[in-house]
Length: 65
Image (tube, rainbow, N blue to C red; front, top):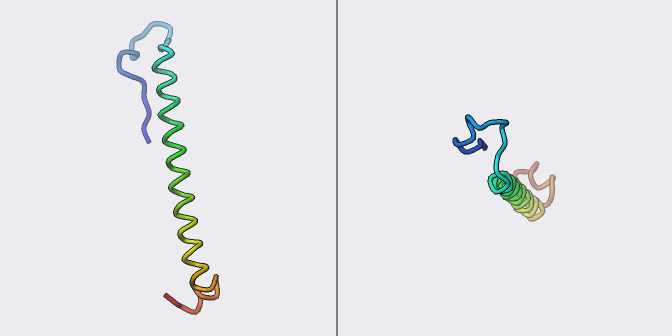
């Protein structure tokens, strides 16, 4: 994920940005991270469920599908 400030701040004095832009950026990053964690957890749960249906690790080693 690439995150950047709006171009209007490239030449801003004292590198100050508005509260609105700051909070919007924080909210965007928070949503991105939350979504990423949810996707990883869903993938983990689905993998765990498949693994349990195959008989745990033994099922994977035997080659059941």
